[in-house]
Length: 156
Length: 156
DNA sequence: GTCACTGCAAAAGGTTTGCAACGGA
DNA sequence: TCCGTTGCAAACCTTTTGCAGTGAC
Image (cartoon, rainbow over all chains, first blue to last red; front, top):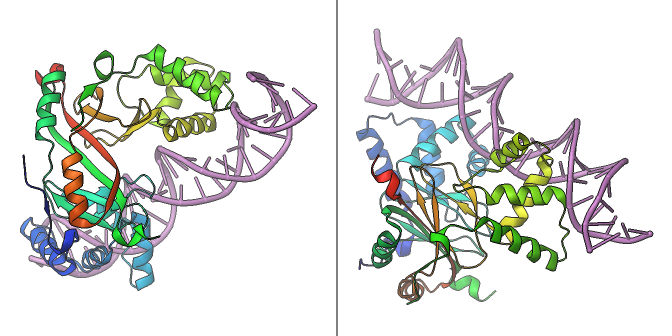
C-alpha cells in the first residue's frame, strides 16, 4: 500500500517554483523559452482553481499584450502532454486545467469554489490486482479525482 | 472496505436489459418514449466500446431514418445526466460515452481496442478518510477509471 | 543563420438554440 | 387535447490549421 502524501503547500503548486521548474525543464528538452510562453506560464501559475483554455486566453488579453490564441492553445497542450497541467473533470464545474507536477498525481476538488488539492499515492494496489485477475486485463494507468467541499465552503 | 464486484456479463451491459430498464425508468419519470429516442437507445446499447455524440449520429444515419442531430444530442445528454451512460476519459482514445447503470460505477478501459468493463465498489474508503482529515475537506464523490490491455490485446 | 515559434485569419468541428410542426399519453 | 418532443437550420463556441514573418539560441 503506497503512502498518501500531499504535495508541498497543502497540495497547491507553488507558483514561482512551478514556473522555474517548467522553464528549465523545457529548455533542457530543447524547446525555446519565448516571451509569449513565459506570459502563459505565469498566468497559469496564478490560478488556484481550474481554468479553461478560452478563459486563460481572455485573462491574458485583460493583462494586455496577450499572445495569440494559437500560441495559448499550443502552449497549453504541450504543458498538458508533459504533465505540467492536469485536466480536471469536475461534475459541477466545466472541465478545466490546473498547474500540476508530472507523474502520478491525483486531485481533490471543491465542487463549490473550485479549489484543488493535489496528492500523490493512492490505495488502489489491492483493487487493481483483484480486478486484473478477474478480468484478465493488465492494468497500467488510472484516473482518480475526488470531489467534496473545502473547509471554507462547508459553512456555506 | 467495500466489495469489488463486476456487473453481470463480465462487466458489460446487457443490451436488451439495458434498453428495457431505461425505457421503463424514463416512463416512470414522466418522459415520453418516442420513436427517435428508441432508436437512439438501441443504437447505444449496441456499442461495446466508447462512442462520441457525432459518431452516434453518423451511425444512426447509416442505419437510415436517423433522428435529427439535436434529438441525438439531447437524448444523450439526458441519459448522461441520469447515469445511463458514463463518460470515458481515456488517455489514448477520444473521450466518449458508454452505456452504464446509474449509481456508483467505475470503468476499466482497454487502451488498445476500447473495450470497457464496468465494476462496482472500490477500496477508497481508507484513503478518503485520511485525505479528508488532512485537508479538512468533506469528500462526497469521486471519479475512478482504470486503463490497461484486455487479454486479447496483450498478445498484439 | 537556422529553424522553432508566433500571430493572424480562416476553416473546421462539435454543440446549442429558436421555433413551428408533430405525436405520445 | 395538451404539452413534451422533434427536426431543421442557423448561431455559437472552441479548437485547429496554413503560412509568412519573427526571434531565440
